[in-house]
Structure formats: C-alpha cells, structure tokens
Image (cartoon, rainbow, N blue to C red):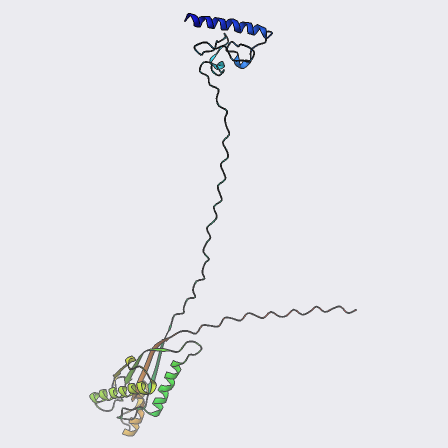
Length: 264
C-alpha cells in the first residue's frame, strides 16, 4: 500500500511537470477529468488501473479509454444493403381453350298416316295404300332443309273397321288388318319388326265424316260411305338432328372507284 501511494504521488508530480512543459496549454477538452502526462495524452494510471482524476472530473467526463472502466465503443459499421430479391416471374397462365361447340338437341318427330278404303270384309292393303305408305317412309328417311334423316324409335300400327257386323267379328278383323300392314312394313319397307307395335280397335274410332252415313241407305251406298273407317293407321315416332344454319356471308364491300383526273 505504501509503494502504491508513492507511485501515485510520483505520477502526480510528473504530470504537474509535464503540464508546465507544455507552456501552460489547457488539456484536451475531452480529457479534462483526468491528469494528463502531456497535451492530449492519456491520464496517469495507478497500479489499480484507475486514472488520476482532476477536480473537474464528473461521470460525464469519464470518457478516456481504460479509465474508470470506460471502453471506447467500436465504430458502427453500416450494414451491407441486402441483395435485391429476384423478381418473381408471373406464372404463365394456360391458354384458354375455346369452349366446345354445343351440340343441338335432337328433334322429336311424329308422323301419322291413315290408309283408308280397305276392301269391305277384307284384311289387305290396296295399291294406293301401299304407295301412300312408301312415300311417307321415304320422306322420313331422307334429310330436308330443317332436319337430318329420321331414326325410327317406334312404329304403331292400328287396324279399324266400319260399324257393319258384330263387335267381336270386327275386333278380330281389325287385328288382321293391323298384322297385314305390319308384315308389309317388314317385308317391303325393311322396318325392324322389333320397333313395330300393333293392335285392333274394331269400329270404336270412326272417322268423323262417316257420321252422316245413314243406315237407311241401300247396302252398297252405305258400304261405300263407310269406306274411310275401313283403314289402318300407321304412326312413326323417331328423332332427327336439326340441320345447322349456314354462316351468313360477309357483305362485299364496293370497290373504290379511282378519282377522276381534272381535265387540263
């Protein structure tokens, strides 16, 4: 302890001499809290590693590195600017596919024909009956301006009789007429038999005009008058696709006429 005091006093004396040797210059303002060996240098350090304070020392002036535990802060290093992030490339959108053209809805087709004036008390078709039936089927089987050919879904054949005779007899007669028409459709018109449905109605569905046929007529006239009731009804039910309308033609633009040159 005695030796430490001597070192301190010697340091004070040395600092005093050094201060005089500087020609009385005042110490650096930032070091005014400590005795300095020379102008601007560090203060005297004791064996306790403390600097010798002056009477002007304050905590605010404890700014000399190594004195009173002060450590000079490291210089602040400006942070390096972050590397710019690569711009995210927008995801390529898939090309929009054109919507498929909507298929038109099929047309429901129903065609019906009355093959009238079948011979009295007979189950046979006349030549006129066969011709009418053939023309109707041919028209359905070919395309027209509004539709394609018809695909048959069902063919309903119904036999009829006039009112002459008994009901049981006429019912059987109407059935025989239906069967004859069915067989003709299969053999002569190549209609699939699986599509044909037949039945007999007898005299139950007369043609309206025959209501004027009076029973007071003689038999030959009455039979002739009731001829429309002796018939076979053929009804075809099927489907067809509508014919697409042609696209409108673009209007032709009139050609530009060359300008007339002025006469000299």
